[in-house]
Length: 175
Image (tube, rainbow, N blue to C red; front, side, top):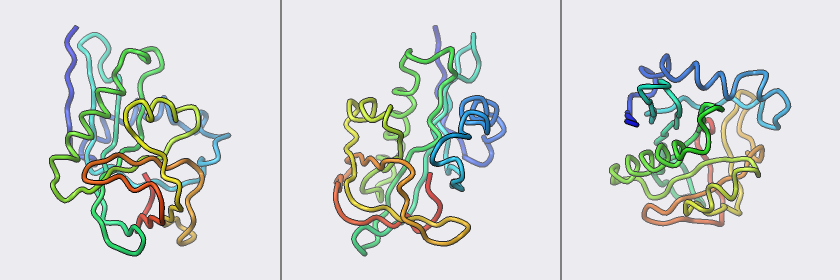
């Protein structure tokens, strides 16, 4: 089986990613989630995994942002919008896409660490891939203003460092 991994501009590739994203994270699937009301940032880049047999099977959004960590500006990367077609899960596609996203973030020499947000059922998945729980507070922007973001758990990945305590202000929408 051949697999194609593309890393594309986030806005330009949304039309390709949107059908998969809606199938996995559409209004019906998220209606009962504590984060259903959240306004999310658009990805700067997208990792798309396709197979000749199935087309698009997996997506990971990549985000770059200057945030504050304990009041100091720091440039970080993030991943979000991770989704795999339901009938193609368990084949390693998400791991490949996340690895490609981390590799892309590492290539941006300004990135100090990576950040993602996830639900409890994904904690073990990310922990087994060297992501660490961030035990501090995270703030972000929403249409109603700056809020403490606690709808999902933050995890960090060591690029140059992996802070697990303190306060992170995303200085914008979450991802």
